[in-house]
Image: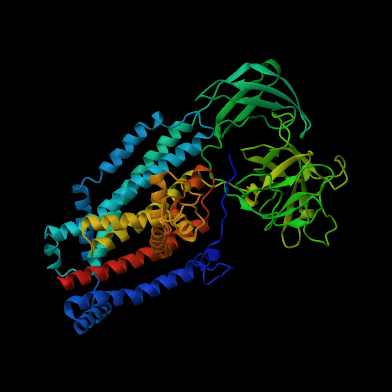
Length: 624
């Protein structure tokens, strides 16, 4: 499995980031940003309401209407809110959704899964990632589409068909109508989401779970493992689902299979000689939820000095930097882990690596590059500073576990044998320990990032992690429903649909829009990009065939439009935060910090949209 390449911030850092720059809203944090948005809505909302009403009723009457509506909402509507009436509206909305055949979305989902086998690449290097990404993304987009249409056309159609008057003539308040609609639409959406989640899990499980037969006649001696100093015997399995595994039985240690398509199989060996029997268990590593604990990374250059980044080997993606290999270099990467106690790690330190390798020469391409692991005590006053090196062989594009215990630790300068080193002799009084990684082969490089070395004490439950991803979809559906209902209270159906879709697109593409607005993305704004597309001109060259005046007008229009859109990306919710498919597909347990961020974002924006819908509906009733 590939390492999970994602920068994780805590919930507190998300609310109150350490870096604050007034001119950059992306450094404000959610807490300050939410307060600014709420303040703008509380001040600008009534002001624009007053301005619009002034054109039809005059300033004095408009002021009276706005102030009376606000006071009525606080003095009458809020204290007189009825859950019974709200539930009645919700039931009507639920029945209306069923009459509008929203269940077609579920049958369409089933149809997509039935034909998915024709489009999914069954020979993919990691079918689990492919299957999980497919089912979660398909569920997300289908429900998103259904929610947009359902929430934006309901109230406008009721007003157009005059069926809403059968409701407003009853003692039903505007807030009860808005909240009832949202609850009704979320009810039918939740039922569909649960059904899709169950079907998706069955589809993934059926498509991935498998086993192999052991080819008993294929076993033969296969040399020695240089790093572990054990002789090996290798065999192979039968081919199932377009792949087969190599079975490795070491002279000492546990037998295993090689990694193929992102998974291995548990190997059990019973008996000896002619009575030996080798059996395989189910696939391991496909449906998992690793809960890694990350340390703090520090890179050192070839002279042993700490640096912010390592060597750049020419890779355009700078997520990783590289440390140089060889005996005459002090280049290394050191991870510091905290919270190391005997209660938490009684037997072993469950270390796992996901290093990348850059080779300046191929050598034996079937063998990994040799490296060294050194366990260090960060306390400068410690009697035992570090352990001797543990030699390992790099494994690319896969998790490489290296459990550290007292049995494989020896004092520095001692190759092993008589005296083992107690692991907790290397833990500082503050509960910290350091893991040092070196590349041992000259002219070879290890690519490292903070998430490439971690502790894996205990995995989460995959089914629970899968459920959390669908709960993220539910929160996104709640936001879209609230915004769709809000727009439908003062716009016609098609315009409300367009406004909601625009909000969803900006919520999904906010980072790209900001990059275009700030010039980080080449090619200019919408108009300039359209001209380049039609005239087939490169984005990185100056625009040709356009005179100075036309170009100035074009850039001025683009700048004005992008400034407006840049501001909207910070007012609208960032819907990309609700995409948890990358966690589940990569076998990583969704962190509690991510869930808290999603729930906070959904709660704040859903509340703002619901309150806005309430006042918009009141203004529409007053205007009518």
